[in-house]
Image (cartoon, rainbow, N blue to C red; front, side, top):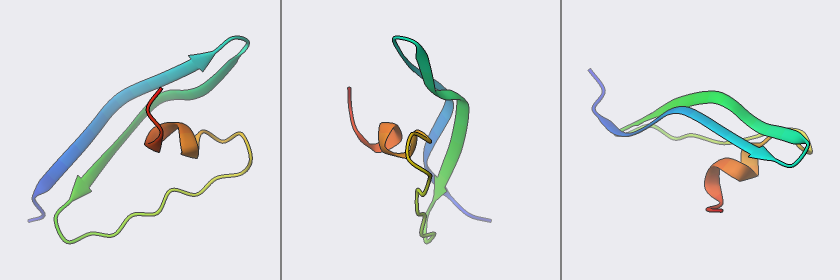
Length: 51
């Protein structure tokens, strides 16, 4: 069984006039590799960049 090292739950990020993320959740487990990909404006950069 994979050991969770980080969990993001129910993340919502809004800017004036637009919702970048809506109730997004993801688990990061030991030994796994993750890639965040998305079209322009999909919200992938919002996850990794502090506001």
